[in-house]
Each structure stands twice: as C-alpha cells, then as structure tokens.
Image 1 (cartoon, rainbow, N blue to C red):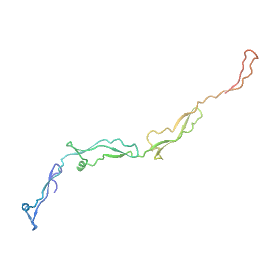
Image 2 (cartoon, rainbow, N blue to C red; image 1 turned 90 degrees about the vertical axis):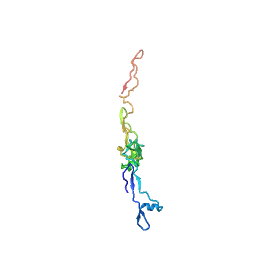
Image 3 (cartoon, rainbow, N blue to C red; image 1 turned 60 degrees about the vertical axis):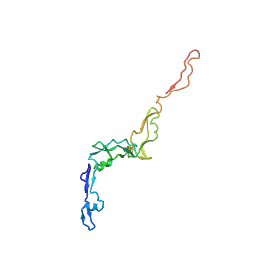
Image 4 (spheres, helix red, strand yellow; image 1 turned 45 degrees about the vertical axis):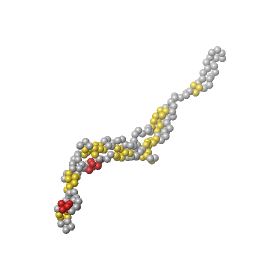
Length: 192
C-alpha cells in the first residue's frame, strides 16, 4: 500500500495471509508452526527528512569565446532549510524544476573588419583627402558591415604631399655693368 507519510519516515503495510493446501486461509501462526517463513507485513518508507529544498544559483561566468559559440558556467547547489547540501536530483525529486549549470553563449559568427589600399591624395600639394574601402568579413566571405563589432578602421584621412608655394623665381642673365671702371651696377631680371 501507500506510505503513511510523504517524508520523515513512515510505514507501508501489505496483507499477508497463510493459505493451506486446501485453498483456505489459515491463521499466520499455523504457517509459522509449519516451518514456513512469514513475509514481513510492514516496512519503513519515505525516510528522507521533511525539508524545504531550493537551488542556490551563482552568476554566469564570462563566455569562453567572444564569437563562434562558447560556454558559460555557474554554480548550482541544492540545499535544504536544515542547512545541509543535497544532490540536484533531490531537489528535482521534491518538485523543483532542474536548473542548468552550463549554457552556450556568443553563438554569433566571428567577423572582422577589412580595409583596402589608400587612394592617391586628392591634391598634389597642401591638405587633401585620401580614402579606402572598409568592409566586414566572416570566414573569408563578405558580410554586411553592420555585423562587425568594435571600432572600424578609418575610411578617409587627411593627406599632405608637400606645401603649396606661391611659385619659384627664374633669373635671367646678368646685364652689362653700368660703368667701365670703378664701382658700377649690374642688373638682371627675375621672373616668378
């Protein structure tokens, strides 16, 4: 039969009878006197203590990888209000839903930024701009740039090849001296 209690130790009973060769039920003492072992009619049952159980759950650990599928773990302990630690199966046996101690994390695919070669500077002197293509790839294939995370490399930057000057001077040949002796002056023409 059913146990007399659900926890804390109870008793379960069953009917034991002594049947004779004639098919009639007889007193158990008669079977015992005949040298037969009389089965036990009562047994102890539901011996686990009457305890309120709960899962003590820790925080998830950091994921083992940043992308591509990793694992996180946390501590899960079944404890009773009597201060003892029990197996997880004890908590589940007493009706608590199972609690996971591990899970998958960062299952998104791994991506990385790609950057092409810089273009020529937009000017031949002074400040200009140069540009390059910036994209996102995963496993060697191109994916939308929105799938890449973190700081993207610059797609444009200021460039300067050399300062821009106002021009250069070109000097023509010296002219004749203004006097044939003594101090005189010679001139030449400068062109910008």
